[in-house]
Length: 299
Image (cartoon, rainbow, N blue to C red; front, top):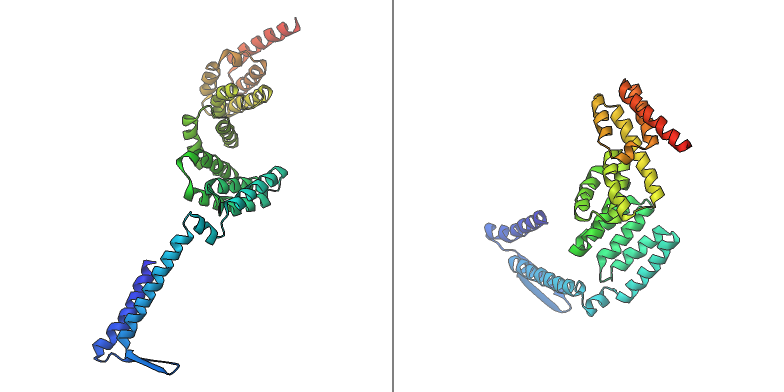
């Protein structure tokens, strides 16, 4: 914009000062109806600049009215809060029906007259994420960011993380999630998103550390959490077994709570890995423990 202004001023300066330097101002003649108006070229340029300035001031005046949040401003922009509310209601119905694309369109339209434009754009972004429209979802998030208030930031961050997970932007998503886990460690949605992220990153130790909070908050049913727990522990055992330092696996195993150490499924898995890695004494201890547990179960 500044470059365009500089070019414009240079051109105007050339037209204005050129004739002065040549010692002849030139002339401009206008004929309309039976009238004839003549003036120097410099006078014409001055009048033209004054006219442009007046047009700019008129533009600023009407722009301020059109962008105002008064009844007149809404009317001039054809923005109706009532229409916006109806569109939001229609969009919510479409969202429940699974028509995410049409729902997103209505949410975006509702933003034009909504009192809370951030909410409309966030709902549009969420619908677009559900429909795998990732580029439009990013555009909706950018619009939401422009009007996002402090009390809306948490909702904005959650939608942003969902989009980042879809785009596999794991590093960016983790930075935000790690901060949210400190601020809201018992929020179910934060825990769900963190769990999803850690699984996609194969960070099983992070999932294990997250499990106590997930059980307390009851993010999922207990049976589901037990399944997730088993997958996380077995996944972590496999990761450590591929590590060049076998002692890391031994130390990790012995640092686990009794409930894990006495679990027959985990014992069998660990015994298998210890045998493969040549830790025969550790494997024999686990096999003896497994035999005792199996005998107890038979009794």
